[in-house]
Length: 227
Image 1 (cartoon, rainbow, N blue to C red):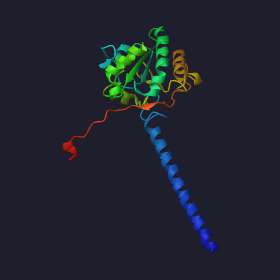
Image 2 (cartoon, rainbow, N blue to C red):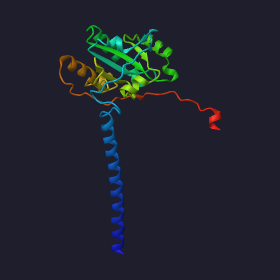
Image 3 (cartoon, rainbow, N blue to C red):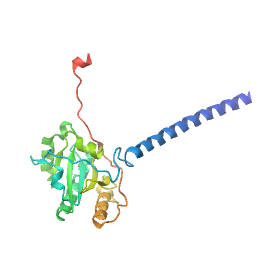
Image 4 (cartoon, rainbow, N blue to C red):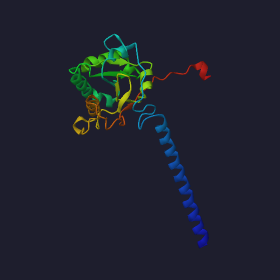
């Protein structure tokens, strides 16, 4: 009886070990897949990748905008944001402050914001109202097709990218280390920009973006297809 009980305990331990091993293998495979097809946190892009140019995007100023407007800028900061995400709202003032600071530096650094959400709260009309209320000093463009977000591999709001004149990604991730301004200790975006302008390596070139997922509008299935 004692031998039988010992055998059962050993068998249960063996089963748990096999399950644990399977979980570890699965997680490792997932990590390798992410590293194979993207950065540490970005699912499809890595530092040094080139993003596509964009054109004919509607802006809150009633005009159409494209990459060519920024082709002479040393480093362009592209932030994917929106009206509806609480995290994005928390960063609005910081984004505006950043844009104001670098406006005084000529064509060294510029910031442009993209809204890739396709839900009513993030319509172009809502964007225009938000930009007016918050007195945005930066271009706020509607990426209605979500092609720009896909090109960057952006998945959250807010999510920041620094690209150079060749549209190569030099930094991507969060703006800083806390959604609460009083708790910020490290300003990743500013540190990256300062390093790039000085010709120094960016010590932290990728950080995890924290915010809401970029959302697409849901299409209702027709009754004919449902039947």
